Length: 281
Ligand code: ATR
Image (cartoon, rainbow, N blue to C red; front, top):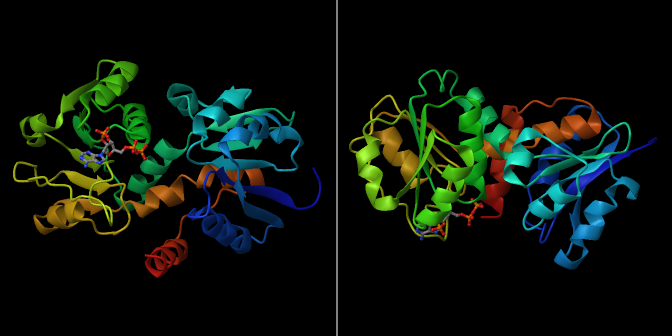
């Protein structure tokens, strides 16, 4: 491929995506002759779109809701996380024009904590994951990759937590929400992956009273940036990490595959995205 390298975010809808802002920042910062576009792909067109990516003129793309499974199915090669989740959020063409897919949500979660809370996984006896959607699955994968001894998933619909636990094996346990109190006292890491606490959604009602003071608390919700969960945790002295870094770090592998530079998640990028979130709140 010669000339300008093209990539973009695909999904239905893509209007709300912050990915163009993130990749646009990096293209400018590293002086790369490339573009990153918003590419709406309707559900009817999804299979054909990903199936013919190799001839589309794109070097690759991000994939967002609702196409992550369709995109994974179209790939010739999947990374370990995408294979495990049956869902891909990052696609690229390799040197032989084969379609490759990765799921970088878990890596985004790890990259955020590695950057904002170095040493966070030194103690990894017990993690609690609230919620059992797609984000929870990626995070359970991430915690398994760092060898957490026990991961406990709590969800309103316990069957969904069970599905993830069954898939990830003996270190991962599923529980109904009302059992949370039993485990809070021994946890090293508490993660909210539900939409509770997000602007416009119901509050996450949780009593952190038994949580050890050394535990780290993080939330994937980033509007508001300081969720009530994070505020409550910080007020009692727990270390906290907000969710916007996961959004930024999950974008790193794609940029590197398409444009050949491993980009840095720096303060200016974080500021840029936070300002945009505020502006459009
Ligand atoms: P994603 O794939 O982005 O993680 P999702 O699949 O919609 O999003 O998952 C949202 C999570 O928030 C789920 O765990 C959901 O619980 P259910 O599986 O029981 O639906 C949780 N959630 C959303 N609203 C909730 C509420 N009012 N009370 C409790 N949990 C809620």
